[in-house]
Image (cartoon, rainbow, N blue to C red; front, side, top):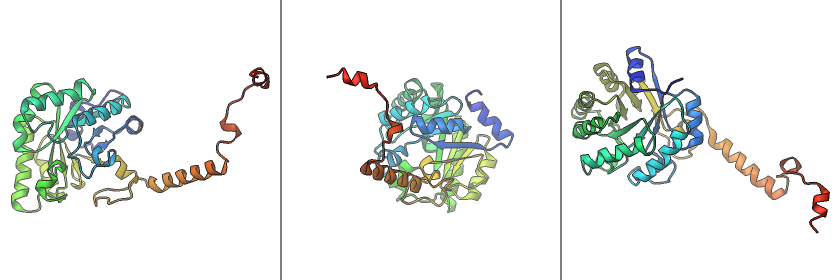
Length: 276
């Protein structure tokens, strides 16, 4: 099976075939996501929360992202790997944005990049595209703007913000992105956008009418005990299983029942005897 491409994804929208996307941040999980046939893997800056323990994504650096993207790429053969451009990696200047986007492709081996923002990011996106780097847009609730939004709130519920999201989507389409993430957007608004643009929409908290869906893998596998957003479905509940395994390990080590004889290696007695 060949690696998923931008053309593959556009064809899926034309054929009304849904697109699957998950985040992953390391080799082990990425290899499983890839083997499951997921179309796209986003190495999200959500690794700040999920992997690095930050309160939000704003502290994540380019070096963090490159490190984790390399690991994900090594674990994949078929899925398209998307590198998520972190806070301030594309805000300072267009030249710096192109250089940082290029690092995802040249250093990390990703096939595309994602960045947040609509109309205000068009010039930056065009410059990245001019460097032959495919771009995924991201509008609606954009986590890097959490301080500006005053928290993680659904976007587009009133006339002004709904119109802004539609304008953003059309501007990104015209700029040349090959897909757009719609996050935290009312279902009917996401449906309208999906119907009005030619590039695939990938929803997260944007309802069932988007061309595809993305979730944070740790959320959908039930590996967190904290707050889980309304839009997340737990396809597994691994946290209790992991905790039980960890406790059992501790108990068996302390009791001396692990490791057992079958977990060790043998040596001939005559070799031992000759040591002294």
